[in-house]
Length: 417
Length: 146
Image 1 (cartoon, chains in turn cyan, orange):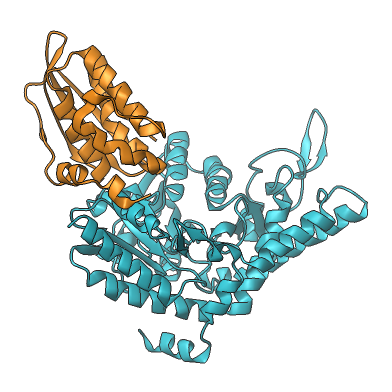
Image 2: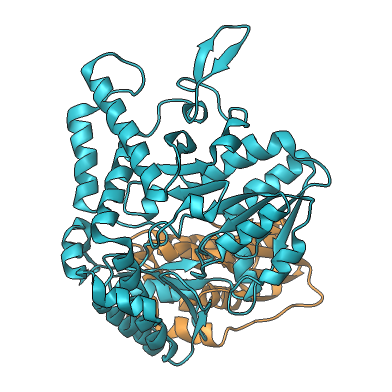
């Protein structure tokens, strides 16, 4: 553990047992055993304040936003736009005009590919990603390449799952129009040097999109300090409901982009001859948005900040250390992804046991982990494994969860003795 | 449900030491099966003698259920006609999906797969090899189960 983390631990320890009481789902049993939920990197659970905020909105204030003069519509609009400002403060964006609500990170990236990339990229242009990317930060660029004739380049990683920065820098050139990188790898937990990468990309005149889905629940994200042009994340990985996410886009970049989808709410006026478009950010929000989801996201941000991101990060780092040392001590367990700087993810394989069998045996013990390729097949190919087992932590995870995980993995060894 | 119902000794044995494992050359037919959800991949090779499966081998990477199922299948269908292999698959499919299915007397060691039905997420692991066999017999090259 580094000194900074140790200081944070003593300064503001997280009372995980108290936190757990905020998450009703954690009191259920699975296969007769108390649930141990170690799949927060796939989707986190929701605390009572989030559930309550959504319920209050639905039972008290629901109406369509930006449309009516009636009281409910105004209340809904205030709550929805209030959530937008809550997001703005959370990531330190300069203006709410830079905060576009979307379905999730995937939609945000597709929006950028189609509304930023498609009108301006062409043959000879390059998009640079990293070998750690989730499929959501690969496939939209491949589609864009097919549509525009531009080329996709991939910056390599080392055997610990860390970006080879020099190779990344070498791949950057004036041909690079856009760099798309994960802030934190979903499959391995590697934290990428986003700020340094962004600076290097900007030197070559490239625009940068950061996939922050795995970063936002675990660390302070300041889009202005990062100097990101685009920063995308999802609500459901940060204790909010599914179906709501955010695209942060620097205002001057967003203002230069044509609309992505057409429909209600994104227009100012429509005639059969011509339509004019709404201001930012609504120009990029065609149709009735996920109002209750946005309100839930606002409540989730309040919740995260009530616990303190430093306290959450320190707590998760402690769990990561325990899990890393105890799992690697089990015979035949191989950790996949051992970067020096990691978020709360432990990916592993076991000799002679397929991850799917690990997943079934752990589920039998009431433990939910992710098994498979984690929507990062190129990462699996790089490590020459068909899949891994992945345990991931959240603010409600405890040392007891890790203890049960370790015991269950030992049980896997027994079954496959 | 008991884990031992899923991971029976027969399953663990066939996972550890799969029978008829490896390529078959020359082969009259080949098909690849892929389960993208869990990453299971297998290739199945057939040598036919008229309507009969004279020899069958497989290779690939998969979980214990898919590996053992493929191993058990190759043992069971070797020497059988297409129709008999089809019929066997119908019995296995029932065994894997119907909660009260009683294994027909003639499915032999394949009965060890009956525990899989208590684990719905794993049924596709057990059926991948059978879909691949169908594909090989019918001349399609690739199947996926998802």
